[in-house]
Length: 279
Image (cartoon, rainbow, N blue to C red; front, side, top):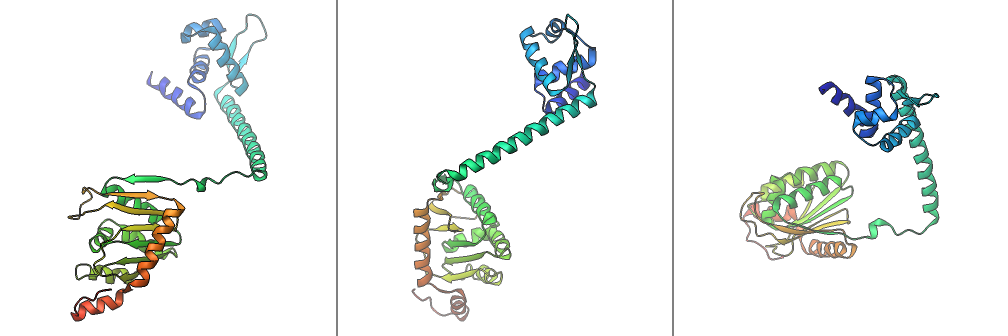
């Protein structure tokens, strides 16, 4: 029985329906039969048997006798599978032809592009926010903008965002980040500069935190009162690809970028022990 079930499973995986596989297997194993005996053997209606036989004949897997009463027989396995494969190939060629026809018609129409439809999603945990950021960095091609506070900068390093950013830069992308550079994250900042992050310092930043990916997707924090470095902490953020909102985030970033100072200058101040400057 286990071998029978395995054989039936392989027939179904090859493209037969469950009824087709059972009927073909019955004929192959027990020999030619009339529809009445097939219906009894498979415990179904004769009308159902006729429909399935018609389908298998169309696939080239079953033959019918010329005498009366009509008897049906399974074609040998190799021939049957070759016939079924050719049937699939013919169907694929027909689908390809129809696809080309649809594309030609579509080119003559004025369809509204799907990318004009904006989507919004609320990310409901630190884990989900970090995972989404990681996915978007990995799929970006041109530019990744980051505006965060000093502690969240360390989050990106702990959970693989900065490593993904390095790979993004190696692919030819550009990362620009604005955050408050302090003694707490100075070593991280030096590391990011070495892997060609473009970073600027804005003193004691406490505004909206956000990321923009290829000027198409934005993630902005709604609630991010992080107390430690764990993915289990509560956090919520808005993910969207709305052009107006993403452009707002980009404008906000560019304004802060113009008001911030280069990271190298801020690091020099910290290393010299200079008192913090207000920018």
